[in-house]
Image: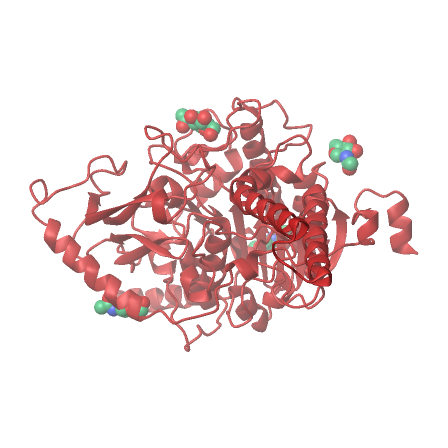
Length: 584
Ligand SMILES: *[C@@H]1O[C@H](CO)[C@@H](O)[C@H](O)[C@H]1NC(C)=O
Ligand SMILES: *[C@@H]1O[C@H](CO)[C@@H](O)[C@H](O)[C@H]1NC(C)=O
Ligand SMILES: *[C@@H]1O[C@H](CO)[C@@H](O)[C@H](O)[C@H]1NC(C)=O
Ligand SMILES: *[C@@H]1O[C@H](CO)[C@@H](O)[C@H](O)[C@H]1NC(C)=O
């Protein structure tokens, strides 16, 4: 009896310590760009060396079914920061273009949205975003910064406001022109024919257009063309630059030691905040193309420049873990590593080198909702609190980070809106074995593409596709002809009845089930349709941040650190004369 009492007291004391230590840890969220789940040693890669990321797996939890809320950067990151499906924040497009392409677009993460950074900042956390943002910049003028990281709860920003593009690195070709050419050739031809016809009609006097009106019309057309040509010619300067807070520090950005610079900024931020809880989001430019690696890594991996970039990123993760150790912060810090979506299998360099990563056994990649597009690495380490070396196969989402860290920071979850993520901590601590995600909705831009159902009483993970992308060429594993797969119209095949897979038996999504091969076929469809009805009812109309109007380049929103006629050039990073201008 006495022993039992003692045991109970001990148990309470232990629980007491646990509850205490489980409050207000510092939080480091590491996000790679376009990294495939098959690129990491801890997920089975034997030739790419990622010892530091693997260390997170050894000392923490490996999620094997960690699902990005979208297979594209902008929507996936919006969901990550808000814990909500991108469709809820208007960050899901209904056209082909699902991400922001320009720094001077008016769309972005709305100020109505509540990010985890906002909530943690209110709880006294020091907050920084280092690296890529890709969630918008300005709304109405070039200095309102309505979508900027500093307007979304970050105290400090160092990095790239838009995204890494091939177009940002001379000699790497242009993704942008490739896309635009297809879309613009016909309108430009029509405009040209219209102009010539108008001129002929005017000349032979068939139609008397007032001379002045024609003049204005021609003037407008000419100015538009000049502006367009200027824009294409200066793409790199206008869209690829680095900022520190609201200030441009390098325009266009230089890839020289870029990962070192990001890493150093992150380490310095940690060093400045050893006495306060902090939130650091380190959002790597690796391994999105244009690929790059510093001298120490170039040519060192077994997988070309792509492998070099992965190994350089792994080095950077090691530096961050080391600096935590140095400041004795490892036990007080939750570290998370993920990728915003699966590897971009379509990426091939102009010389034919593979520049996209590896999604392991999974089909497809970035821009598709096949598992290869959305099943991403998910590693969480917090020594002494989450299990070390455990592997969890339950469905989890990158939206789960939001409620997990908001709770850890003792902040309140917003009660005026739906949060789609669930607190991961009970799962990570082994206190529960089932994920709270019975259903996950897989959107391709704004279109509901597929639904995942993990019924509460079964090991099955059903995945039901309402449509699938048309791969091109047809027998490939991606949309190589168009660079990414699109989500509507002639780019997809609709399925009625929908395609049904059981991922627990067929993770490669090879053989769709039929009523003949699967007795629960109709039951699965019924459950999924009900869930879709309920989910659809929970959506509210919000402004579309990725409408054409919000995507277009608006010259008056352009950020430029010198005059436009000096081509928006400055470099406060590498010293030299611009530095003096800056200091002067
Ligand atoms: C490791 O990753 C590389 C680069 O993405 C890939 O080419 C290779 O197939 C992967 N190897 C294994 C064994 O998974
Ligand atoms: C990049 O780093 C290397 C090695 O640390 C150094 O030698 C070089 O000067 C750096 N380059 C720039 C532009 O800072
Ligand atoms: C590091 O922190 C632990 C507890 O978290 C403490 O016991 C230890 O003394 C600290 N070491 C140093 C060098 O500050
Ligand atoms: C219906 O959807 C809401 C909002 O996503 C969710 O909270 C609720 O659990 C769903 N109910 C059912 C029965 O699926």
